[in-house]
Amino acid sequence: MPLEIERKFLVTSNTWRAGARACSIRQGYLCLGDDTTVRIRIAGVDAFITVKSKTEGLSRAEFEYAIPLPDAETMLDTLCARPLIEKTRYSVEHAGKAWTIDVFEGENDGLVVAEVELEGTDEHVILPDWVGEEVTYDPRYRNSALVLAPLGNDG
Image (cartoon, rainbow, N blue to C red; front, side, top):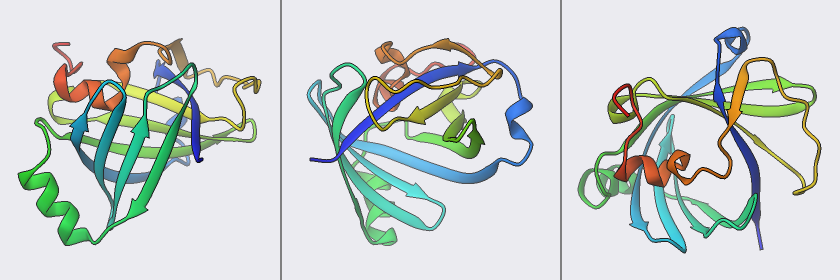
């Protein structure tokens, strides 16, 4: 079973921007259950459906499949819960690990979160100086939660 193992942090500065690669993301949720989420995502010109299990510690099951872009656009426009998640995702390397930094827009404007995927739950990670508080275990920072309770400038 494919597993997603990640840690998540709030971002405290813009020093990560040098050399970062960007991709616009628009995503919505078909299912926002406590035990399962089903997400539709358009990242650039690619589209995906992703099914995730409940998070247990740092990990959860994740199944992701490419879908036709027109299908994703229709599902986002007609079937997904509102508001949609809009963000620009940046990719940077730090200490041999790939980090993603999500700069949120729309209802979550002002929120900036960094994530690092791990090989195992006990993997040691060297933290960059541009991350602050760890929010891995705070459910408010899950993208699916940001639909129901946005954490933008007013959040």
